[in-house]
Length: 226
Ligand SMILES: Cc1cc2nc3c(=O)[nH]c(=O)nc-3n(C[C@H](O)[C@H](O)[C@H](O)COP(=O)(O)O)c2cc1C
Image: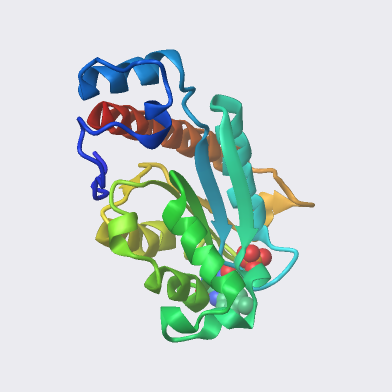
């Protein structure tokens, strides 16, 4: 399911594993003993990234809402972040020239087990800086990554930006994108809360789909490394 390069051969013992009292067994068997008896699966690292350059941000509310719903469904390690926090250093044109905080954002996105992404609609499309961030991301680190898509706009006229803008972008990355995307206009979010029942239902559906995608990805990763 996920096409990350595997650095370790399946039969090769891991460093942590080698500490266990398992000498004398074949490597593959030792590895599976280690998984079953000693290691707890770590929580899925989920990054909810809002591509808005202002605060307060409606897009932030939306990615947070999907993250909160996902957190009700699964135990996750959730980080919510805003583009605005990574500063002018994001404006570089080469990855090597990114400021340390901006480089950290790209690494966080690449290292996540799953993403919840959100963009404000600007001039009928995703925000330029949102796309700029993903221009730095290594496609090999995105392939097979579970992703939920969200966007906010001033009204409902550009609601299909999630389908016509975001979905092709994450299709390019070969990410595993949740079928339900979430769009909210300004009337759907009041005082920092989602007030529209349809948007709330779509948040629930997107979170449930993302949870299922995370389960599938983690199960196949565990099988591949066993
Ligand atoms: C430069 C600019 C262009 C915008 N263009 C659109 C647009 O084409 N369609 C739309 O529905 N809203 C548009 N908006 C409104 C924003 O998408 C909307 O207010 C959004 O919720 C802002 O998200 P934020 O609060 O996370 O920054 C635009 C806003 C700005 C600042």
